Length: 386
Length: 151
Image (cartoon, rainbow over all chains, first blue to last red; front, side):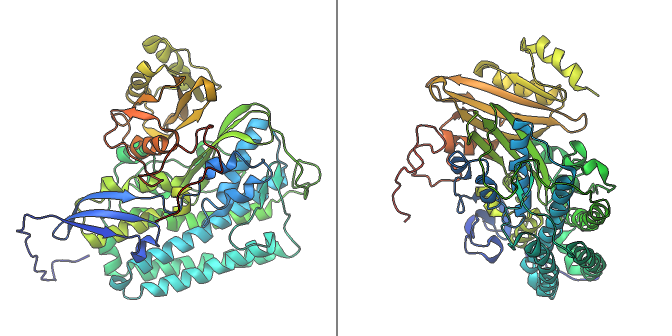
């Protein structure tokens, strides 16, 4: 962007006092569940203390009291914006410990659900991020409304698949709970075709906007080393030049059958993270199409009595299952003691680690940039606090 | 580039610990006094720059066990590090000097299990309120433990 043409009068900060400012929990960009205590020198942030835990429900303790059949539908409440992901991580961990096979059809259905979920989740991210940066974007609400429109189409698909729009209970140990209804595949193809066409509209709308570029380019840069040390994942780590995608690093649920690109950007700033996600939209749609084309016939669960809530017993052992969610590595570390309930279950929430990078990157930025950086991290606080 | 087959003998040579586990997942159990040395070895020499998580397990009368998973993303192998603290013991060396991301992870672990990470720059509760009593993920903490109403 050409800044030369504009005459900006910069007021030098001559004061010596520091100001402590609470950003959140009532700030619109923190959605009521996040509080950042900013220490300011003038308009520049010099220190951040993040206060989280507003949504803590102690999922890990709860999981020790629920059986392997009961918990998957609770697992969806950790990351409620991409509920399919956490369910999948939990059932995968149980399947790994118990060495339970999953039929090929169920694996493909899981892939379709996961990729549609990624599209839906990225829609919400793009919309809310632009809304948070609102004023400067000259119509941030426009992008928000467009994105919600596309997200609703995907939620409609989920509704006809599982009966629920947000928290699904689609996955179960050994397979999936539901098969796709008649006519669903055609509807799904039509929906992804429509969204595919609109992504370039968003890109044209945003990337030709000088304010958008100025607020994202070079803002909130995460270095390659910091990215790994803090353990950020998903679009964030790929925006920092690290080629880490679990679908490639440790293919699960037949991801090796599909042809897709893993976008990597080197810059590490907000714009890089945006670019990674925009490519991911298209790649997810490509995977959905391939999975629908090659959907094998057969059972959807390896456990007899698909609809029953019969108990699953997992032998003694432990496993760490990870899946590539919309926000990165969603992991479930499960220790089974041979009973119907886990002995210990640890959620590795992608958003928790992603958010932990904020105190390292925010200092030095202006207050307004905090909103842009936070939005580009795409935290879902249900997953941060668990 | 170092592979997981080369990593096993290196851990054995430097720390005298035999790594178990299959293929690209190495399982290493270290006593508390070697915990930080293992972390440094993992990051500097095994190239495990990526910190996945730090957590703990309460093995009742056998005491607490701290678990950390780190990964070498280029070579594609992971290290599951475990450290048995011993019965009644809550002190454990902090991994923050090695991985900056261990900061929040260890705070959560302290919050839930009461593990005191020595050398942590800012060890305080992270998810629960600061005046919370007890450590909820300990097996001795009942699920229905009453707590005072929110202020």
